[in-house]
Amino acid sequence: MIKKLLIFVLLVAPLLSSAQTLYETISSQKLGETREIKIQLPRNYEENTEKTYPVILVLDGDYLFEPMAGNVDYYSYWEDAPEMIVVGVNQSKSRMDDAYYEDHNFLPANKGAAFFEFLGMELLQHIDNKYRTANFRVIAGHDYTANFINYYLLKSNPIFHGYINLSPDLAPQMVDRISNALRKSETKKWLYLATGTDDIPQLKNGIEALNEQLTALENDLVTYEFDNFENATHYSLVGKAIPAALESIFNVYRSISKKDYNELLLQTSVSSVEFLTDKYESINELFGIEKKIRLEDFMAIHNAIEKTKRWEDYKGLSDLAYDNYPGTMLGTYFEARYEEETGNPRKAMRTYQNAYGQEKIAFLNTDFMLAKADAIKKDFGY
Image (cartoon, rainbow, N blue to C red; front, side, top):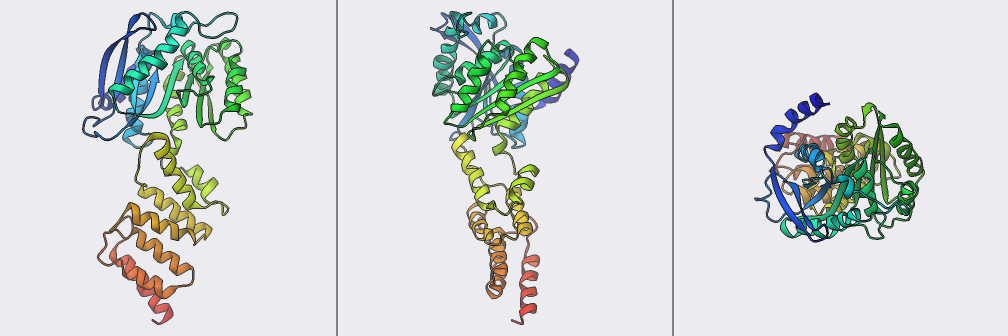
């Protein structure tokens, strides 16, 4: 276990050196004591003064913060997840009290109730006041604290959108409570659940029962992902689960996947342009990020249109290309393809010719565009 952690630290150390990690002590009225927290700010946080960032709150910050922070920095570097503020709460001496629940109703009580209010009413407020945060929040925990994070999910208007359950030690009734809450949810939520084939048997029973109920859940607003990692123990599964959880929760932020391309875009009943528009509108609405449409996503839509022959989609795609890559040949090419395939060869020829003087992009350059125009001219004798 120690060897694996050492290898992980060596891999992510260069990434962490580029991000800002801060250490703070917070005085809590709810707990009647001070608490130590760790905060990783995104790269170039100070320079991007207008940008806001989603927040991931990590319980068991003594050992979960660094793996989470390293993965967040790595995934955001390659644009597979948005840049985020990662907050870790140290609990090495208090985690059992922090996660305490009553024996009769199995809800947080005593120190557990105070810790519940500390996170929601004091810590998050402190982070929101001091740093530039977006509204999207995720919380993560391991065994006892993984059970604890789900109490927020039971609220009618929960403060977290995503829940990363790493081998949770589920309280009695929690399986039914989570299932009922997600079944009734009227807002988007993400829940990730992980165990391993060599996980603690007592925990696996509850985890498998929860997975059985959530697999049968019918609510389009809920994104649920489950992993049972082969040969993974209660502790080693964490290293595999964190990146899997980030991929699941932030799937919409990533480039169009092969799965979406094959299962959605190649279906003639799906408008590829609407899919692309919805994808980037979701990124804006969820994470507060007005992201430029990636060139590779334009190319994926282009390839899908060519295969499905939904030529009308080229019209909307050209409009998006003109907005996102003005002055380049991208919008011109899509507009020309639209005219060419919808019965207007002369207009297509002239549109291809309009690319002269525009900036080349992807596979498009002046020679390619003028050759397309000359081919139409030759075919139709213009």
